Image (cartoon, rainbow, N blue to C red; front, side):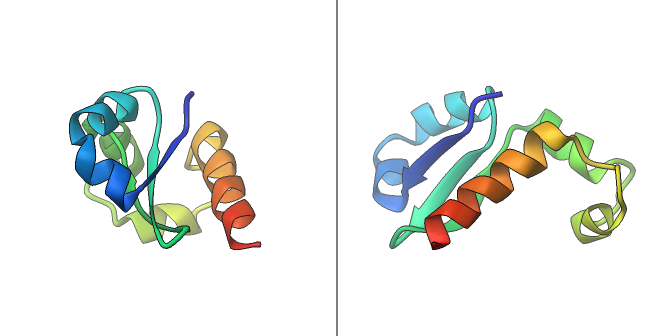
Length: 82
């Protein structure tokens, strides 16, 4: 899985590239160097939300999300805040 990080400016200038990147993995969009948004493709969204569950409920349940998504996402957010 590829993880892409773009600034808000980069995202605004190349939204089509960001959409292509989202097909390969999450795209983190930053504001002033801090993660602000995540762009994912619809299949990943459906996987995360399952049968109309709230994403907060999924995050609270152990073992329901793929480690390939959560751990890399956490490490990217954590690195940028330090």
